[in-house]
Picture (cartoon, rainbow, N blue to C red):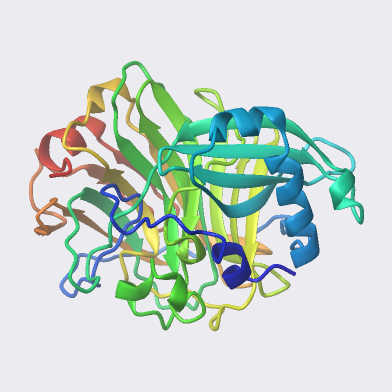
Length: 381
């Protein structure tokens, strides 16, 4: 199989000098207001989503060759420097049987990301063909909060898990909000970090095994939105799977360790059936750190100019899993925190007119993020 090092060793363009981050990184908060669950609720059983086997090195190399020989891909690259960053899989839950198609993500000159979907002929990768190509603006990174010699410059509003149960899965369910404007510049989703990680190392691919971190969610910039995922192996650079959802659709984002002990990043639209999945082997720990802002549902401002009025307030509910995604139950406890782009923390309750989050994800509750307040009080610097 392709290891994380084999996958990322192909990245030659230097991303450390970039200036935009889509990763949440915070220190753990000491004095917080916890919302402990007083409700004993039976667990919800769901079919565990187990993705396909990871590609072998030979398969990955062959599929890269297929993509790089595609005429449209050649036109987009047009002699510019490029790096093959990662691959994942997409499929549709309504297909019987479900057929997972690999897709490859290419960074072109730190400006454009190519997502190439492949009709895969198993055991004959070189005979596969490119069936779909999408392009997105490349979203490079800056080192996260707590990273050595680095400062964060984004604003955040976080509802984070503070329960005492050992967990290896988090799920966010929500109805896709309505977009009515442009240049929204907000990112909303779920993230998790392994139990023994040093948070400062979570975007360093060299610490893939001992500080693994992943996130899955929706990013709204420009004229619309897109689903993204990121993790330690790609240095927290956002990857754009081929995935579409309409306003009002029910979408779930999950991060969990599957029954094969693979860390899994996953998203599904329960209305149109589209789903994506990325799995990783070789992580040292199979549980998530709790009472940490990196194990949470979050909203992040990614620009100093946030048009919160252009997006209806997203509302979500959350579940936890302690058995590798087989059953899901309410969050045992949770706390909320807003943080300015200059790293000033506001632990709830602090202001009835400035708090971004109303409600709380603990105990089966729902929480709503106020996008106008996010842009007014917590834009990026």
